[in-house]
Image (cartoon, helix red, strand yellow):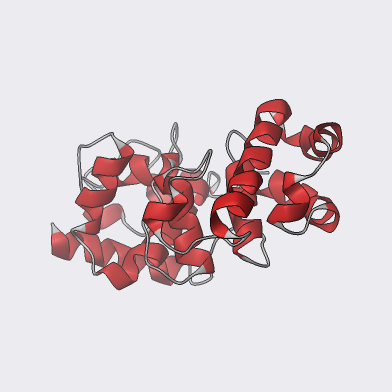
Length: 225
């Protein structure tokens, strides 16, 4: 299992040499906020509102004091804007009151913040602080089960099961490789099996079209709009 899993990651690294976090950010606070905003929407939509959002509220102190209606107006295009506004206000206030306006660099601290679970915390740790973390989003969970690495469905159990197969130093890039693969080829309903670099080692090969020409039509060159 370990050998097969690591081989799969090597193949994905060759397929997606530019894999990275597709949320734009300039600092840990921005990444924390845009990751919270990315729930139930796409990274591209979040990236579109990011410049306006942080021009108005560049740090936790500014965002904690933001008028609710103005914040709602900025993030309105993302959907669920009232709930997300509430999350950003509480999150920023907690950063100011408990962490002197700085984003903590420890998992145990991050998950105490309002609206921040292990997935969001690992995104921030891995991409803003260089601390290895596994991001179990819907793509990651789907792919590791298709690949036979685990049968777990609980995100925390998935994180621990998959983490045991890889050196800790590889966790962040492993997350990027699988998420990119899930967005571009290994789709939920119709995976592009005939255009998949993991075809020879995937136990789920055949769930999607195996004809190379048909499968290639399903391949996306970038994440969803």
